[in-house]
Length: 130
Image (cartoon, rainbow, N blue to C red; front, side, top):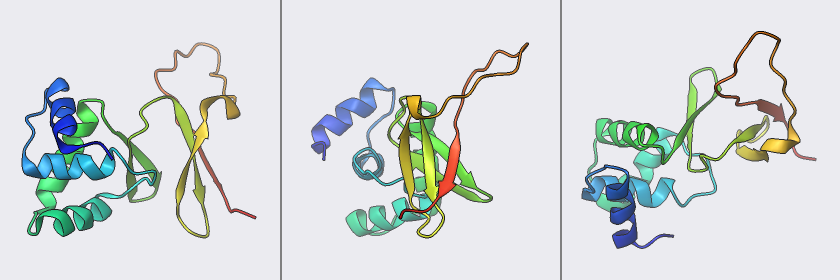
């Protein structure tokens, strides 16, 4: 996990004023291998800080996304998770556990139809471990 002073610097480098709440959220979401939902982030922030509003968590997550530190990934109807890996890659959702796994960019080949310029690609694969 990145030390808090480094996190504060990272936030400043991305134009984000580091508050205790923002540092607590960044500390978790930028260092986890999971793809946490906002509710999961809220649980971690409350464990670290005590009382934190849901709005503060959503606002902080959205700010981190806008500033390029996180990626928001819609993995199902009404299910959004956050990914600190902002490099190009895809995701596999385990149908049994719901866990989201990163899939290397080169593992999935997608070609755009003729006449289209593609700005972004995010393939979602669904399956289960064996």
